[in-house]
Every structure is written in C-alpha cells, then in structure tokens.
Length: 439
Ligand SMILES: [Zn+2]
Image 1 (cartoon, rainbow, N blue to C red):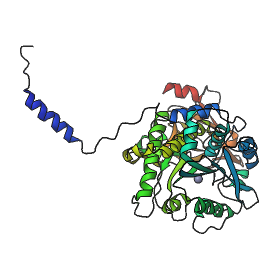
Image 2: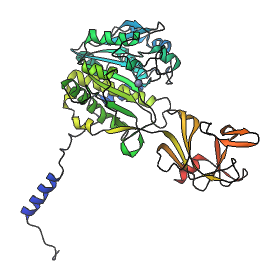
Image 3: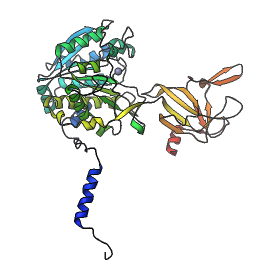
Image 4: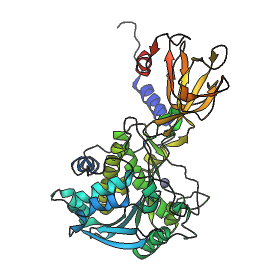
C-alpha cells in the first residue's frame, strides 16, 4: 500500500460531479416492476381464460361470435349491433364497466390481422367468467370500455386485408365510403371516448432498430398533423403507450418497436386522435416459434388489461414519455432467409457461388418458401441467415424449370433444395439443424 497516493476528497467530489454532468439526457424514471398491477395479472388471465376453440389465426366471424355467445349472456356485457358489413354480416360493439373514463377499442379492420381479436375473445370471456379477481372489479368500476372485435368480417372470411369491395377500411376514415368505416365513425361520434385502441397486425418481416431482431409488437401514439407535434390528446396517448412498452419489454426484450409516425389523413388511428380521443396503435408482428400468434395474443390481453385499469385509475399518468421516445423504429426488410456461401449445382456446366434470398408465402408460419433473389447478397438482411459455406445447393425438381433438356433457376420458384457436402447428388446431405448447431 505504501506507494499508493490517495486523492484528496475534494478532487473526488469534482470528478464525480463532472461524471454526473457528462450525460446530457436525463435518465428515464425507473421502469415499473412486474408485480405492479395489472400486467402480470393480465398474463395470468390470458392463460386461464384463453378460448381454446380459437387456436389458429384464421377464423371467421361466425366462429368468433359462436365463442362469444355464452359470455355475451353475462349481465356484465352489453352488446349492440352498430352496422352491417358490405355482405350483411353484423358489426357488433360490446360495452363493459360503468366507470367515468371512456375507452373504445376495435380490432381486425384488416381481415387478416386477428391477433387482437383472439385477445378480445379471451378478455371478454374473462370479464363474463366466475373469476372473482379484484382486478376485474377495479376495471369495471373505473372505466367504461366499448370493444368492436372484427370490424372487417367480410375480409376475415377470406383472411384478406381489404373488405368485400376491396377497400382498405383504414384508408376510409375521411371518405367513409364503406359501411364498416361509417359504423366505426358513428360509434366514435356517439361515445366520444377519451381513449382509443386501434388493434392491428403488422408485417412479420419487420425488425427493431439496427439490431435486426424481429419486431414482436410495435406501438404508436399517432401524429395529429404533418408537423407531428404533441397536443394534450396525443401526449396522453404517449403516456399509455410508454407504460405499455416497458411492460411488454419484460416479456419480449428488444422486440418492442415504435411504428412509423407519418401522418395519414385517411387513417382512423390518426384521425381519431385529431377528433379528441387519445389513441394508441398496437401492431402485433411475429415471434419465432409462435406460428399462430398465441403468445402475441396473450401479450395483447395483458397489455389491454393493464392499460384499461391504469387509464381508469390514472396510474398511466406516472409513465415517463422517455420510455416511448426511446423505443427503436420499426424497419421493414425484404427477405425472410438468406442461405450464404454455398454453390448451386445442376443448372449449368459448373457450380456457381450464389447466396439464396428466400421469402415465405406465410412469413409468420414460415411456410411456402420462394426464391426471391440469387447472387451476392452480402449487403442484404433477413430475419434468418444460414451459413452454408463450403456446401452445395442441389435444387429439387420443383425449384427448376426444365425445357428442351435445359434448366433454369427462376426467381419466384418454390425454394426446395438439399444442401450436400459435394457437387455429386450422391454426396452426404447436411441438415439445417446441423448447420444451426455449427454456428
Ligand atoms: Zn392493419
């Protein structure tokens, strides 16, 4: 110890003050703990009251309302028909609670975006159930919530985005040409809700920030004008989204993004914000190993239960806008899978060094792979990459176009192939799993 010189305390103090001033941004308020009501309860509700009959993303309006028939008999739920779709399917709003704060949430205005509809079925089943949880009492006492599950039943019938006349209902908020958009607008104008939730599914081919991880959920407090300023209405929406973001991060760390906030004067989320309702957009993306979005369904239940109670009781006001402002941006990418470093055989006279860029017909379930790009893809990004260096790609017949004894590898073909150790069809095959293990 003899040679060590001890710094005078005054200098230490100055140094620590300097260190404290070095960071210019104020540190955000500490994130809430998981046991603070009501996100963790929401996850338990999602598990216990999951309606097992709806187990896949694609289901029809009949199936949805069939599962809700029993819950809707509960005195806690009041339902009313608010309109009819182009093809005559009823559009139904369900109201619960008697609290002074009003909330309107709608799902599946895009017919193939059903994660939140599944969540609403589970949520309503819980509200109607024999469960005696204090959370439900707090929710029913503090808020009045109106839900419109599946605003686009005609689109859901074919599992497509648009309605029966091909209109994107979320681009019909201004013109109101469709009965679905008119029903939502009329309901909004009658209720004049203080808070709104616009529930969608986004492209599974979306990543978060620079890290390249798949976006599980993207949130947005939509802009009220091109200038993207915050008035009191949008600022409240940001607080709700901020609270939601930190809770979702505990479940899917690094996979919560902020959605593009460009103002769209034809979109409901943006216009409803300008009509005075503090609105949050929730976009369920996709998660690995969740081909039917059942995990995202549960996260939607938990996020909504927590949001409804915290809106009703005012706890959302303690959220820090920084939790939202620091979310990383959604980034769209083109490819689902890149197979790097192999050589393709069976097309011309020699092996060719090419990367394969593959997209799936169903990017969530990762089925129906198609050849999207072939060649040097060193600058391209994908959700998934396979390092096949030193291996040979042997295309299956389905991947090749055969004509007059000549062969083509064509973009758009089914991406069906075997990876082998050598150029000969007799050489040993290498499985994708063993390649992943090699990494
Ligand atoms: Zn959508």
